[in-house]
Image (spheres, rainbow, N blue to C red):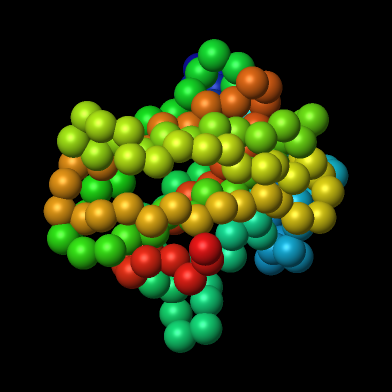
Length: 172
C-alpha cells in the first residue's frame, strides 16, 4: 500500500511538471508574419518575447532579396522612463542602422547614436499605431571602426526593432 502511494505521488508530480513545461498552444503570434501585427498579438511591454519577435519580423522583415545583410538585429519594448542602450559598433567602413517602431498612441521614439562619447546623430522615428498595419522606420548611417552606442527612448509604451547592415543607406 505504501509503495502504491509513493508511485501515485510520483505520477502526480510528473503530470504537474509536464503541465508546467508543456506551455500553451501558440495562437496567431506564432503564425508567419503577415506584414502587420494582429490585434490579438499586439506588441506591448507585457506582450512577451514571442509577440515582440513576431511583430519585429513583420515591421522590419529580416529576409531580403539575396538574403539578409543584417549583422545585428534586436527587438524590444520601451516604457516612459525606461530607455534602451546597446553597443552597435562594427569594423571600419560605412554602416547603417534601421529602426522601426509602433506604440499605443503612435507617438515617436527618440534615437541617439553616440560614437567615442560624442553624439553623431539624433532624431525621432515616427511610430505606427500598435495593432494596425505598418510601422514607422528610419535609417541612420554611421561610421565603423569606433565604439558606437544606440540609445532609444519613448514618452509612452512603444515596441522597437532595429538592424545594423553594412554600407550606407540608400535613403536621403
